[in-house]
Image 1 (tube, rainbow, N blue to C red):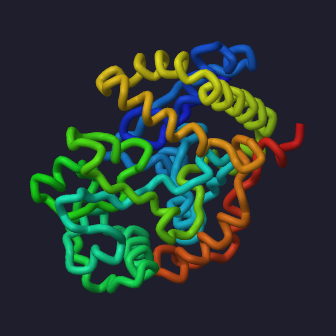
Image 2 (image 1 turned 90 degrees about the horizontal axis):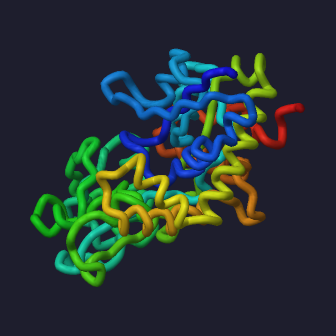
Length: 306
């Protein structure tokens, strides 16, 4: 039974990884002859793609822009084999006390986010799309921190960008009626998969049946996680016991619909998202070039030969 290490998409598990945990807990991986270990990254040693590039994990979950950048700038032989999410998970968040009522109101206000080239480009895009002046936005460098609505109320910033509407934006003690949360794909952002599941080109070439089996079982886990939320919630509470049950339950209810495309399929990477998104990243200086973007992924469940 091969030992497979899979790196998750965040510093800790959250409901977006539910399908992997369900498949392992129900022994579906074991039944397919796979010994699966789920791990999280040590940010001091890099992100998921760095672990994949060093061969320290076999599969990993990561944002598509980071994959495209590594392939464009370093020609790293890493490849996406499945889509985990079919929506952008990021949001702009503020509170009613700030007087901000729409994205263009961010002009002249303090916006907390991680000001990477892609982050800056997205903020500018969202403000301009609503008729605002992106040059007037005041950047508060939050780094890896994800400020909550409570931090906004305390005066650390007037709004945030980058919090996930299905996780970080749910935290904090501020009453719901005083929160304003705008998912980026509802306020003009380009369409993109928030997270992809990928591996090395070597593993895909040398062990295609292992990749196929892993993806098939993972798809089964995500379908079950969405269909049986109560059982999934009980499982998630065992792997992230330090978060309150209502938070996990609400996050699961929000994130589960993003796992499948409009045809109800898990894992299918949409080239009509990947191509325009790669072009947008290149046009906005967040990607060295968008050549060969279509070689950055394969639809593993559909393309890997039996």
